[in-house]
Amino acid sequence: MDPLSFPPIAATLDAAYALLMGLADFLQPVAGAASAALAIVVLTLLVRTILIPTGIAQARAEQTRARLAPKLRALQRRYKNDRERMSRETMRLYADEKASPFAGCAPVLVQAPIVGVVYALFLHPVIAGHANALLTEQLFGVALGASLVGSMSSGTVTAPVALVFGVVLVLILLVAEVTRRLFRPEVEASEGVPGGEAITRMAGFLQYGTAVVALFVPLAAALYLLVTVAWTLVQRCVLRRRFPVEPATST
Image 1 (tube, one colour):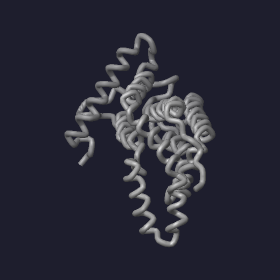
Image 2 (spheres, one colour):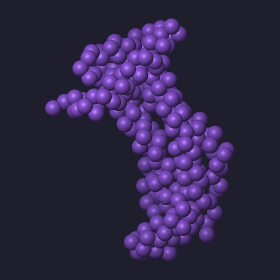
Image 3 (cartoon, helix red, strand yellow):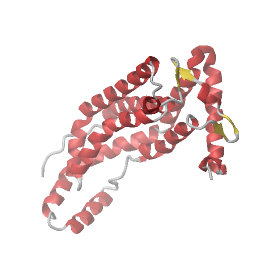
């Protein structure tokens, strides 16, 4: 059974399809042949605007983690031979501070299904029983449903495909490097958390993992990823001024 034929999934995809087609038609007088690509950008901005409250929660969580880092390091030293006790004391510390070690994960969790929907919209020729006209849309001569890895494996890589995907990937990597440089102190502050070494490694990987994902997904989804990482960088810079993270001091 095709999962896309499951009524709730089909209805979700059809609604997303109608929204994107409506946006593309509205933007066509301005963007011309790139109207669908611009619609992806507008959709991304709308989603990120809706998620601003979760971004604020994430900034508060970063501030809390930095403030608690010295106490967490002290717990690590005190209970380094009793990991179960250390875990209990860590959770008690977060409870006393009315905080959570998992706070701030909402933006990633919410956007994962959205990227999945965009991916599906530009992958399947039929949506909810009707032809998928989005597959005919292009950006600078490159189909929005084309992926770089897919084009390479089929031997259909052209100069426009290489150029468009190259620009998208370079921009994603540039944003990742700027983010890494600006927020490295925040990652270092997380090392006071149990498992902080693993958190640091994972944070470093995630900065560049988006570029790896963009190699495999359709161009439409890669555009979504580019806009969302750029938005995230700007939003974090703005919120850092509102919720500054003070350098942690050892205790």
